[in-house]
Image 1 (cartoon, rainbow, N blue to C red):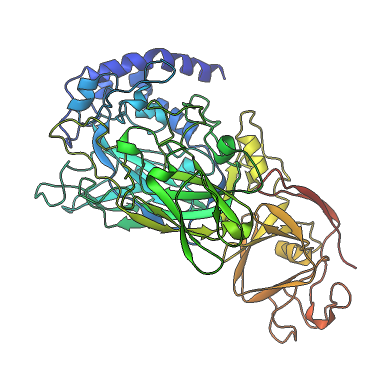
Image 2 (image 1 turned 180 degrees about the horizontal axis):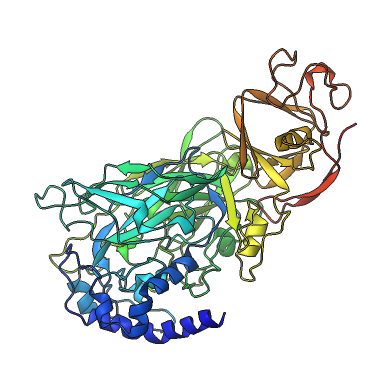
Amino acid sequence: MALRTRMWLILLLTAPLELKKVLAQGPLPAPGANAGSSADSESMSPFWSANVSAINNFFADAFNTDVVIESDLWDESPKMLSAGLGFLDIIGIDTTDETTVRAGGGTWEANVTCADGEDPPIGALTSAVSPTVNLGGFNCIAIGYGGLPICFSWPVRPPTIHPSAFLITFNNGSTMQPPCAGILPNVEYNERHCVVIYGDFGTRKRSTDPLAVYPVKVEVVQRLQLIGPDGPFNATGLSFEGGSSPYDTGNGPYFTAAKLSKLSDVGEGVFAPAFINTNAYPNDGVSLYGDKESLYRIRLFYSGGMTPGGVKGLQPVDFAKHFYLAATHSNGEQMNITETTESYDVGAGTISVLGLADTGIAQAQYDACYIEDTDNYIDIIVDASSKAAASAITAVEAFQEGYTSLYNPGGPGNDPTPDVLFTAPTSPQRVAVKNAIDVPLTVTYCTDVNGRVSRDPEVCSQVYGPDGGEIPDDSNNAHRLVLRDGACFVGYRVTSSRQGCPWKAWVGHTLQHFLVGNILHTYRAVPIHIRKCRILLGSFPMFLPVVSFSLLHHRAFERHDPSGLKPDPFGFRPGDPPIGSGWGSTLASRSIGEETPVEVRCASRRHRRRASTAPAS
């Protein structure tokens, strides 16, 4: 601890001096030139020069914590959803000086006045970033680099992020690995789907220019892991092709997915690293609009940052400037939800849009100094009188005729430098909304200093919250049966009386509760037919053929073949006694294990119950 504290003091005292030294080495490179960083260490202090790798690793470890909490699964399969060049040249500029920013290809906002009378923060004036991105977990010092976000359908396991994980292919056939990679700004625990890489990624020209150089393919070549329903997944081999110049007309950032679910604050906020700038947090829907049971969230996931002009922060009150919702009335009529001040009757009830979230903090007044988190997510918060009413929403329409486009951080701002090419705005888009009210389609995973693993949102929130902690040995007593469509049951692990068959204990035990969204329900005699599913027991996945579960108030497992003529995947044989009474020969499960009390933990802290399971007679 003393060594860690000493390093902190040295970093805090010397970082501003080192930044000045880096900037004083010479003029900024021309846009697109490869500045490199080999000369950076030549004028550094002895401490920095001798410990630059350790310093970079220190900050990378601080940001790349091994945790995701209720992070979205945007697809049932792991995919690279987007990986196009965002912008060039503005990562690694002295952001304290307008002249230097403009000379390096950035923009500078004009006439920015804060309502509180304070000086505008740098983030309200320019989207350029200082060279010391290593302090943000990027393993490098940047000079005139570009930015390229790589976004996946499943969340990334942050400790596996490293520049060597990626290979970029350019339109001229050349390849390179980026010098910098990090999780920022997608640091909230229920996000973490995108890795941002910095480097010299081409020339600032439209793709029709013979001298244009830009990435056309990004692939994972080693090391990187994603977190899926079964835990860590090796992402090697995933790729995205089809990139072009972000300076082409119509080639702005775009939406890759949208999902409707009950509003929750699980996994929201930033608690680690402790030194991160939290001016934009908390910005979740609960913090901005409350936690009424009638609130729902439409989460939009997109390829690159989206802000007005590329600099000014997107504000919670900006919904009607850029978006409207498409909905289907219960009579089949198509309708649009366009305003935040109106209640819309959709037949099954009413819908009102409250505004945007996952932008910045709630304020009494929003001005040009508003700071948002600039990540790859925007939430639309909806108040619906019923689940059926919320389910009427079918799509988000964005940037249509009469609406305002958004830009990634390479945009022109409100006072663009003359004769400088800036990135293109968004084009009109329609993104279908996936209904995840009953089935949230999320994943949780974390480890602690002892190497223990938990998939429990409450445990991971505690371990990686402001107070910290360790994962209890019994934190995974509650397991989920994950189906192909994302639905899940809650199962209970018990002490098996048969060696070598841990899954038998799971199957033979009670399926008392069905997890719907964030609420734990109890059912009786509700048959569920499943074509294909997999059981996740700890880190051991078990794939099953076509089976059928019967959700009874006592434990039971119903085989798809009641006659017992086909081999049972769990070893049950004809003649095994059924569980329960009055259900006939269709039930062929038997109890294995001793009575074990377990706590069933759900995604929302508002819905937790304690269940006790016992073997059937």
